Image (cartoon, helix red, strand yellow):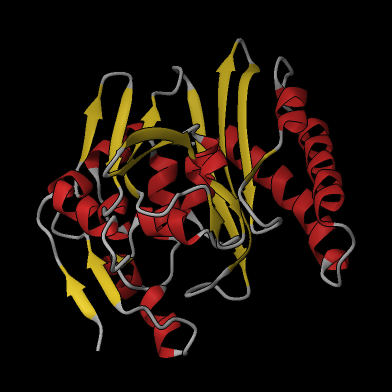
Length: 283
């Protein structure tokens, strides 16, 4: 029989995480419960974090927005604050699973689970989001792009908990976009996904933020492609060139795989289409 903890205060949760039980953190349970049912986990203690107020808040803060780690995908999708400032996060949240999964799954779980196919993690990485990570001994801030180190691997130390994410405000006239390719139109695990923010100035791209997910073992920002876009007037040739750069970078990182014949050309076309849609129709 497993022990189940449900603290209502952050300090109590951090003390339990530092205790001898070393409970597994449980929020929506959309990953951990399935893994236990399939015999892939056998935790003896669980820590439910859904009643901790600090983890449930989404609010404007100085210089950006704070998003609690236990905020669900449905709450993200319908958040007035996110719709106003970071609609691509709403798009990413809306693309996750089914309504049932979105009503349970959380943004912190999406990052901590570190699935290469996660939908919200690339959106956070594209926005330069920073995670507030706490333990009983202290707190630290880690960029989401650095917190996820690989498939099912994060930079979290034992006893640490993701409390919230800070998303810095974007410059004026920044157009945002998110897209995803799956095997079907709904309840689909991403084969590729991507988040993009393009800042326009004088008809050119002044700043580009681009993160592609599900192509490598972690959300990947492509600095070379971002640099290529900056200072250029956008057109089909530029977007296609950026897509080819990203396809080549994916190949360099992952090497040739059985899926490369499909994934590499699709990554190039997907990236070009995401850039074009963001520039022309971006929210």
